Each structure stands twice: as structure tokens, then as C-alpha cells.
Image 1 (cartoon, rainbow, N blue to C red):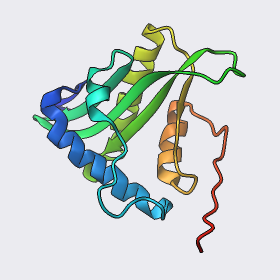
Image 2 (tube, rainbow, N blue to C red; image 1 turned 60 degrees about the vertical axis):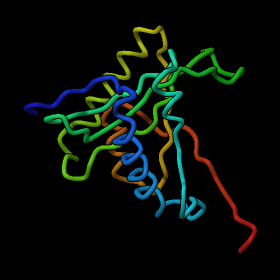
Image 3 (cartoon, one colour; image 1 turned 180 degrees about the horizontal axis):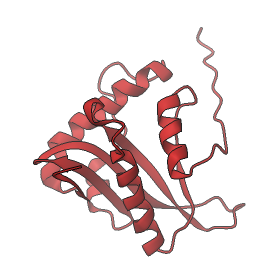
Image 4 (cartoon, one colour; image 1 turned 45 degrees about the horizontal axis):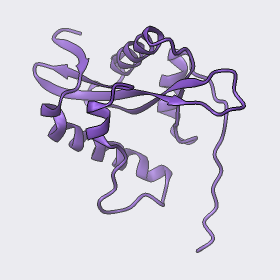
Length: 155
């Protein structure tokens, strides 16, 4: 795609990242009625921008940020063979740019970053009913491994 770049986010991108975060929240609200209707936030952007074990990327076309994603190296459960893994999050591409492989480019970049850091196990969360996202992640090679279940007793 002409004029598309994938780059590390900077603190100068924070306003645009906050806007994208709200788009992620809105996109996921239909899958989870427990998401706050006001002031819902998912990410500690300051930490993601400054942490050596995090890599927050943006996709940009002609100076406009149209997508995002991060990888963060975390400690793994003691029961697993690997001691660390990369958790992927904030995977978002503006609606008009979906289907062009931008999410895959961001993920490939984060996978390469993980490998360069010696981490080969990657995880992410996705709502079970979000078929489009699941298809996108499967294209990169992800498989379903665990299903989170929930009950709300206030009903």
C-alpha cells in the first residue's frame, strides 16, 4: 500500500492513540455489556510508550494514524514451558482500511520484535463472537486455546 508506514509510536501520537482506544472500546462494547458506558479505558499508554518490554506500533498513511497494535513481554504462568511470552493488544485498523493486510503487517512487525527479544510464544484476547477478528488472527497463525466464561449475577 502506497505511503503506508508501520512505526513505533511516540508521545506525540498520544491524542490520536486515545481516539483509537475509544474506537476499540466502541467496537468491543457489543460483545461485552459490562464495558463502562462512560470513561472506559483499556490501555496505560504512558507505560506502553516508555516501557522497554513494550512495543506500541502505529500504521500511518500520509501522516495520519489509521491503525495500532502493541506487544508486551510478560511473565508466563509457572505451569508453562516458557517463562515469558508476548501479549498482543490494541489491535485496531480504521474501518475504511480493513481488509488490506494492515493488521497483519502490524502483527508481523510485533512477531519479529518478539523473536528478536528471544520470545517465541505470543498470546492475545479476542471476543468469541468477533468472527472478523478471529479470522484475521487465524491468518497470521493464531489458534484458539482458552475460552473465558462469565456470569453476571445481578440479572
